[in-house]
Length: 244
Image 1 (cartoon, one colour):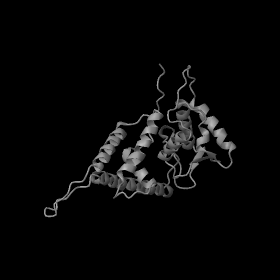
Image 2 (tube, one colour):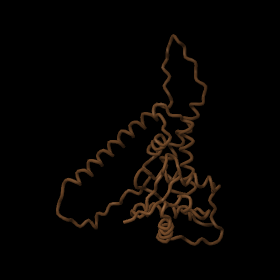
Image 3 (cartoon, one colour):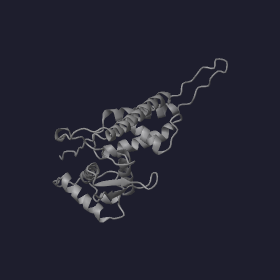
C-alpha cells in the first residue's frame, strides 16, 4: 500500500482568516452573511485541501461543522412571534458575525503595526550586524494574491480539467524532488514573457505532481523568483518571472 503524500503548510492563518477572505472576495456584507453561499465556498476550499492531502488543521474542520449546523438552523421554519410579547429572536449568525468583526479588527491592527515597524526600519540605523543565525522567512505570497487565491485557483483548475479525484499511479512512484520541480517551473515561467497561466504549470493528473508543483511555486515566490497576478477580480491567475 502506498503512503499518502502529505504536506504541511504554515501559510494558512486559520478558519476565520479564510472566511474573511471569502467575504472580501465575494463582497459580502459582514453584517448580513448569506450562510448557504459562504458555507458552499468554504467547503470547496476544505475539499481542495483534502484532495491535495494537505495537513488540514482540526480548527478548519470544526468551523466547517459549525457552518453546516448554522446553515441547517437557518433552514428551519421561523417561529411566529406574538406581537404582545415582542420576544426578541436572536439571529443565529450573530455569534459568527461578532467573531469575524473581532478578528478583522485585530488583523487590521496587526497590519498597521507592521506598517509602523517598516516605517521605523526606514528611519533608524545601526552598525552592520551579521544575521546568519536569525534569518526570517519572507512572505510566501507577493502583492495582493494570497495563498487562498492560489488554493482557489487549483480547485477551479481541477474542476475545469475534471481532475476532481487526482489519481495516484499504481506502479512504484518516482518521488519528485522539490528543487527539480522548482527549476522546471522557473524555466517555463522564464520562457513566457507575457506570463504563463497558472493552470499550464500543472501537467499531470497525479496528486504528487499537483502538490509538488504547488509547493514549488510557493517556494519560488518566497525566493522572489516569480510572482502571481490577477488582472480582474476572480479572473485566472498568471505567473510572471521576477527579473533582478
